Image 1 (tube, rainbow, N blue to C red):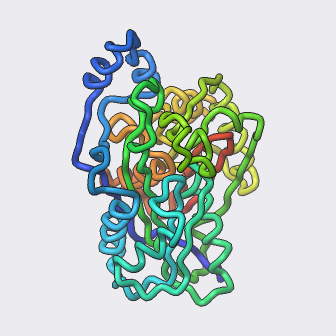
Image 2 (image 1 turned 180 degrees about the vertical axis):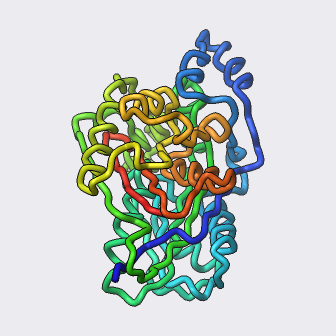
Length: 332
């Protein structure tokens, strides 16, 4: 008998403020910069951003996505035993964002905590929760993430400002004993710390965030340009290793739910895996890049477009700054 951890509900949320590429072309034209080549490479067309210093934040967005996921799972909030908030954009350091979300949902969950592994946070959390619940009296888990990058994106940053967006994504996970194995099957991770200098947020570090002598820009995200061409090769290695461990081939996987940062790198990856383009779900053109939420946004799109087949396999794969990679094998 297998103790399967399955996704039984999905919910997403985007702010109402939708922005197209034209806005950013005009914005950077004033600085004698042209973001169009990058936007084409990344596959950007539109994105949703919260209004700067408005009434939305990581917790309010997470609350909306969580409500949708719970409704989609067709369970009561009182059935949730555990809440995990997995993101590198928390609204609070204390108390935990998971606790705040639990309070606003009127949840009775006794296990609530935050975790952060940057843009692979949702993948890492799925893996951790799968291991954690096996010997625990836990049946239903709410896993939610938010990417609230707007307050930290410098308006002169030609990479971060036009390519990123705000969003939240949530899944309800259920422990389901069964003779057949399904749900979270396996995972693989890879880290190369030599890129730790490339992306920092806040650039000055939290110890100096209240120092008035620090330039305001240093209290925001810092993106140092670097060669990212290794991504598809290393994603392929990670995916091949994961599939080999489970006696599968890339062709056995029906859906590839990647990080939505770069469409060009996704296409290069599936070409090297020798799988058809129809097996990827790309939503970065509609929603921009939304950090750890992005593979779940792709999952939600697959669900809405009826591309999920019971008994089929999916790969969730992402990369985080610094850099670290994660891939997770899931069976519907």
